[in-house]
Image 1 (cartoon, helix red, strand yellow):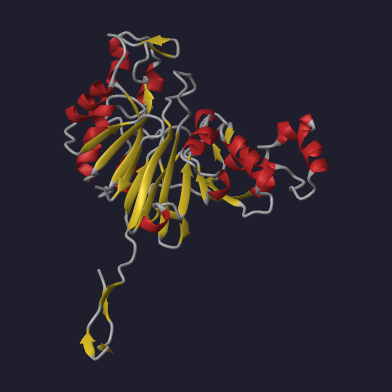
Image 2 (tube, helix red, strand yellow):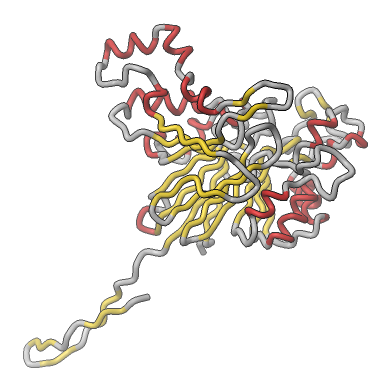
Length: 354
């Protein structure tokens, strides 16, 4: 706390000294799960994968900068529940081009187009086009460029332009600055605003997958996405990503998708082994968090969802899982820090508020 001292003054013949506090508002960061559904299936109204990171200070409720990582189905609805207007998002980051992480973008951009066509544009940050070993290409830039095509082809954009000519003629895609980067095995700064810096690292799941770290004066958070180990199946030392572990060193919070060991090939769920092996299991995430010195591990994109009898068509061996099952798996990995098993809208603040 900084203190300033007023000069000695006289009032009615008496001298006095006044000490005035000029303490700056304390910086803070909020990490909120906008959706925790694991994969394309639906369960109990959960929204698709997404994480909102906000930074500011006590004067603006930690909300001066708003960053959305992935936009699964229902992201708009969750943001509205948190009273975060989509027109206030500074940037949107994609970990990869799977629909359960991206399909909410159309809703977000269409709403901005309706009411924020005057700008500012929103940054969309993602990896450059990535070709798979069998020849298809994953393209974030193409996804964004064509985000409004269905609305254009249906005639809705033209109809609404006739009502309000201040809207942008090209539809929702006109409101985006697409910033692509070449992901590698080393952290790369990909975005910055004031004291908020975002770095990214290439990580394995599908071609073009990336994980992110946000550093602020209040603390740091890593969003792992669906990252897994570079070795696609056992034998291997871990199911987790070495790149994410590098990014997560000393982080206050690690937000990561997870699969519970109950879905493993040896547990008779019928869950496809290649899909199981490309996710980081909860026990290995516990071990990674311990090695990296992470303070809080937030599990999201839960496979299977808590309380579900099935993950899609695949039954959960032994019946539905709850929070204790996930925490036990993390503890098995040796992590003794704070474990948070994600539910939609769950928010933590760094530093923690009393």
